[in-house]
Structures are given as C-alpha cells and as structure tokens.
Image 1 (cartoon, rainbow, N blue to C red):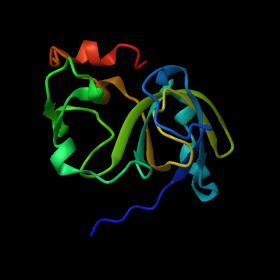
Image 2: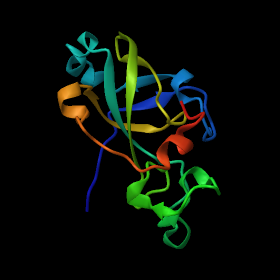
Image 3: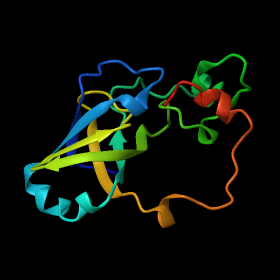
Length: 151
C-alpha cells in the first residue's frame, strides 16, 4: 500500500479540464501552514515542478485508455498511455513545471499548472535545468501536432 498526504491544494476556479491555453492559467497553491518553513529559498527560482493527484479524473479504463489517440485527436496515431502525458493514467499522478509568480506566506502563485480547483498537491520541487531537461532528447513526430493550442 502506498499512501501520500497532500502538502497543499490548488485554487484557481477551474472546474473542468480544459483542452488548452494552460500557460495563461494562474493558480494558487495553498500549502499546509506547518510546511511554510520548507519554502525558504524557493523564491530564488523562476520555476518549480508541481506533483499532484488527479483526484477529479474518472478511474482509469484499461480497455479505452491503455492505447489511445493523444488528446482524442483522430488524425494522430494511437499510442500507449506511457508514451503520453494524458490525465488518464493507471496511477492518477500529474507532474507539471510551472512559473513561480510569487510566494506570500503559505500561498504560491503560479502559471501553467494544468490542474483543476481543489486538486491535492503532493510535492513542490524547484525546477533545476540540469535535473529537469535533457540535452539531445527526441520526441515522437506526432507531439507538435498534439501541442497546438495546449500552451
């Protein structure tokens, strides 16, 4: 058994999954008050990585979601769940890099978080390019078409 205790919650007024324009979405992460000392030094970073529980997404349906077209786009080839960043996952965990706008007390204001209002936050980590990006990486040919309008 694996158990996680949320470190905070997302507040943004978004109550249904969007099909795009997440870069403009501003969210507040309300961190648990007892964890505020853990934010010391985070304001020195421009970006963070937010790990969250996709608790408002319907349960994973292996028959429909193990192999599917990215974002339901019919012109894209079906690919496996582990070759996508889909919200429909065997373990409903989201991971998103965000821009840190501000930190005030227990409130982190961020942009680019693709999570709905009330989503439990499991962790916040600083975005460190040496850890979080890989030189000479490649991606599938269909990815640029899938990303149109997403950010």
